[in-house]
Image 1 (spheres, one colour):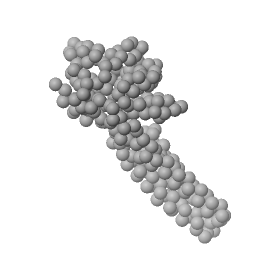
Image 2 (cartoon, chains in turn purple, orange):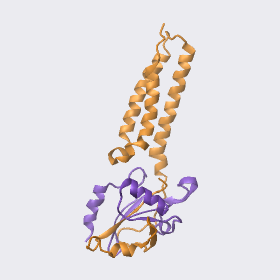
Image 3 (cartoon, helix red, strand yellow):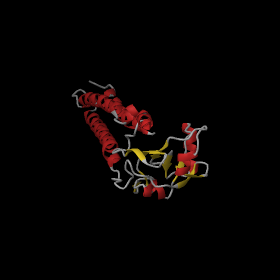
Image 4 (cartoon, chains in turn cyan, yellow):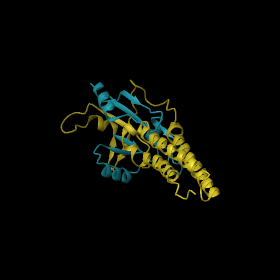
Length: 90
Length: 151
């Protein structure tokens, strides 16, 4: 599931263009992003606050099993690595 | 008298532009060329070789218009150096200016529950994603991907 400050319409466009079928959630006011301490202040278009890239693997009890906070936003977790980490889930 | 067009200089300059912009337009799509921009650095290297050849040609004594030839060589080489510097800055320096996020949930901790609107305007909660069956099977978990947006 993906979360960004993008409005639902923008996410819908992205999902259609890229063919993504997983859930995209919109957090335009960075409420959830703030609760997770992931706000990158002023880094968006026109100085908007956005989320820094981050990935959390969460089990059904809501407990974090794996986390990735990249140091460089061009470097992201690779799908195959994440699938490998998903084996950590009971 | 050397009148020929200084093609290595111009090719070097154009290749510098290609080396910079192809990262954002193309190489960023593939993790292998995105995580470290080696393909772009190779293009920059090739451009540098051409530029060196172009500068040598531009500063040769047999140019038809030596002043113009030297000026063009100087300007295009400087512009290329600026483009290269901006690329390095964007990829290796500015991209690392990220918040520390020390308050983000750690491994073993429970993540905060939330409800947000999905792409169709439907309210979706994390608990819902963690419990609602997918294709008749109970989910094993959820991957939360926070991304920058504004694409």
